[in-house]
Image (cartoon, rainbow, N blue to C red; front, side, top):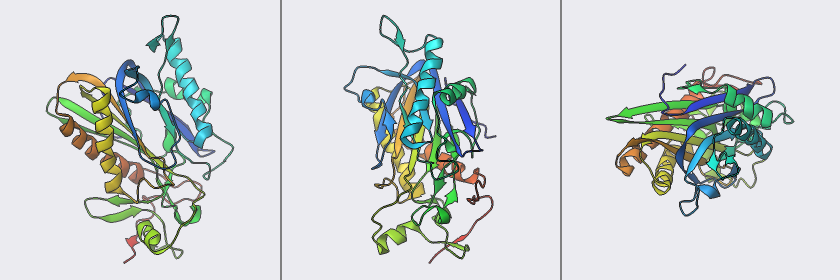
Length: 320
């Protein structure tokens, strides 16, 4: 388990390995200033409009990520139930309303397509939440994640959930990534594919980017998405949190090729939980680096599931 530090938050997972799905929650009981940036062409989200800097509510109390495509958004109801029982949320006078933005990934092509995260699973993920949770790979919302699906599920590879923390001077920036990308995963240090579409003979990567350049891929039935959650104890406004979410998308561009396609619902949330004054551009640069590493960790820690090979079991060369 990776040693990480998510300030003022807890991370919890519900993992259904039998059916190939799950959900993850990042809880901030005190509330956190929250921003979001949605870049993919096929997003599945909730409460993201509320995070626009021009809108009223300043804080979120949890971020929910689920498998199950749009069905999986139901799991956020369990998160709201858990927080309501604890008296946590936006004070609306007559009650406290837990603000729980969220997003989903399409994992219905892995395992049982009838199994999706529901309210009960979201609630159990909250019960499992703990500080500095370093679980990675086939856990939570990463359970059914795959990458490199340009030629369908028979040529793809397993991915999952990854985390990373970077501490600089007086503040920390941490990232959680749920990687279910249409494209291939690239190690930016080497420029090489580490997971992606595999050739029929099974001895090399095909290169999704090259395939798209050479062929007209009109429709991809297996939808995709990479979701990121950044947590920092640097002071942010909703506007600056959104700016950091925008900058953090650089991590996807560096590690996923192609990213932000019409087949993806790429979304990044940013939570500010601290009191450390810091330059926004510096925080955003570190956030992108932390998310970059979390994406690589999500792939390197995934295990083969339902016959879909993982990085641990298959490390190939790239087609030239």
